[in-house]
Image 1 (tube, rainbow over the protein chains, first blue to last red):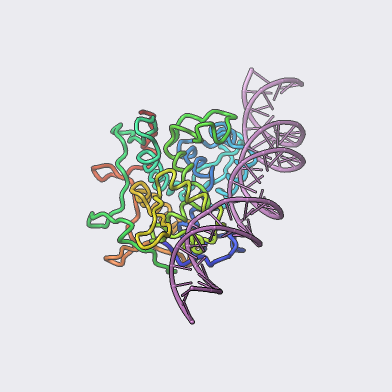
Image 2: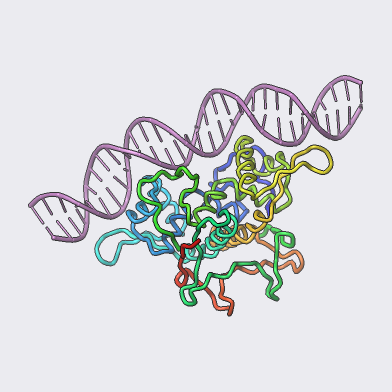
Length: 158
Length: 158
DNA sequence: TCGATTGGTTTCATAATACTACCGATTGGA
DNA sequence: TCCAATCGGTAGTATTATGAAACCAATCGA
């Protein structure tokens, strides 16, 4: 699952801004691996668009929210646009941002299954149309057989 | 995709230790949504078990590594055991930890697709047996139709 | 027009993280 | 058997990130 070591003793954030340049997981973590970014995106998936609404929903400090939104926009996950009616600002998921849905569902499903004590109330992701829980994601080959950590490896290429 | 607001003005980490108790995504983020936990787990999936090896691979400060390993053990993601040969410590993925594989792959695949400039070298996850890239995860109904953010919602229950 | 709301920025206090040094126990080698 | 190196940490201290609060210009609604 890994990539060659980032190199011992190197600073966590080298000059190029990425903690482990070729590793796609490390880069994803650099972008959204903080306390707020994924929760901001969760709300964005739920339709939240305005600065004030994110702020109210999350209870995050405004300067931090400002910084995170700026980062997400800078990296093409959100788009900052002016609302059609009036001059209000809106933060809307880009195509790239929408593609994070799968990862967020995977994390959410793991949370549902493993991050609560038995009997502790928690949320469940539900299909609007059938009103049944969304099936658990799993990784499989084109022929339908399941892939686990044991039979995959990370290959470096361009 | 969301859960009712955590409440305005509340501290980010209330007395129960969870930032948004019923939300499974928020809880997953509480557990692994920091700069290091997912990278520690990435290496764990790759077979790393010793404190020193994690430290060397990641370049993380030892007290932080110590703290993160302790957290992951406390939450049942890793198990701390003494190696069969000798008295060395080993950190091994639990069942719960192994179930994070899907989420890590989802994040990695997103990173591969959206976090690199075109032409920039990056890693790709490969199937050991077929030596081909692992198919991209996607969320689908039992009948095979695709689910997107637009046709799911989060339901709170116990 | 006038007060409330939006979308921030700035300042300062506090919390998290990183760096360095150190430590006892264990291990490997001469 | 000794000694040096490694392992798995802990304890300061410095640096960085985060949070709370005050403030502000522009806009909106009545």
